[in-house]
Image (cartoon, rainbow, N blue to C red; front, side, top):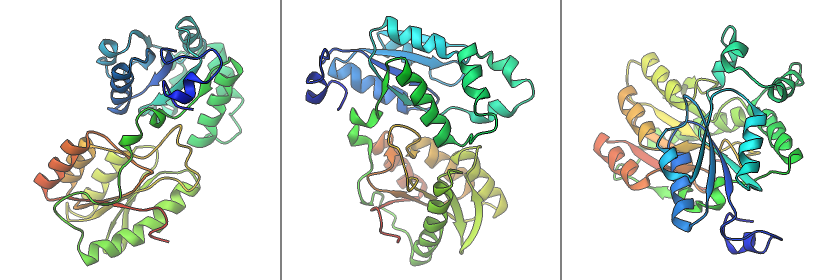
Length: 296
């Protein structure tokens, strides 16, 4: 079922104007989603994580709330008051904040969030188990999670070389080498990106995120040319943590000296595609989207 699409209208009690909830983190994706919903006439009830989500969302979403502390109760109350039945999450959450000293005092969780986190104290705290557990918490309150891509399927990248520059044979070899490694890392839910030069792994993305991993790779190889491989997890749940690239990715690659961005067609979000490709062409960077299974 899609937001505001005919299948939602067919859901009992739902209409094209049924509000959708948005839990917004950092980056452009929440803005793109909110603008698309606005253009389609779908009201968005946005709960924006303070210090991460762009304040611009307040001008796009009819109902906007700032999440100043990690309070599940606040999110539930905001969605319920706005008439939300289905919700989505978009944008990045800076998970490293939960590892800092006295992080609970800084994040000020409510009892519901504290209980949720405490029950996972000895459990798996990788991204997928955490987010699936969060989705269950919302479901228990009557809110069903859906993928933001139901509303914006055009964000998924198409297959092929998107830029003027094509990868060289040597770079293609590095892509194939890095692709298998990135899939393995995704399989164990560590990260989605690997940086490679001459079949040597320079960096693997973990909690720091893709941009920081790219910069680290640039430092380690003296700002020389290398490839960035970013793929979906083999078990990718399209409701969350879908690999995303955009102009910021290209700017970071340019600073680090990377020359090729290899991504997975149909499984990767490319934000502001025309601007991103134009920027890559300006910096002499190749963006290539390979179909699923092409590197098997």
